[in-house]
Image (cartoon, rainbow, N blue to C red):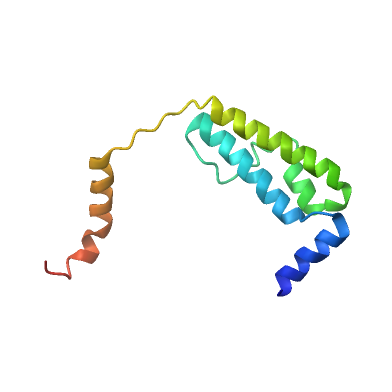
Length: 115
């Protein structure tokens, strides 16, 4: 265990959970929920964290006991699963477009090679 492992252990001993891992889990649930409904994976989620829960947990983890955290995780996971079950955006893989993108990206690198 290094410094980060030690900090995580301290958080586990102090709060009964890793608040950094919790915030990351909730953030990914929110992002997944938005993605399945809009097709866009949000980078900045302030607009989707309406109550500011993530920031509050990150800055004041002592306000949350382990039982609250478990309920919160269950709630966010349920919202994610519900969003997935009623997915609104359907993606279709287009091989021609994918190949064109790859070709355009790698073309400058490939000009130095002879096949």
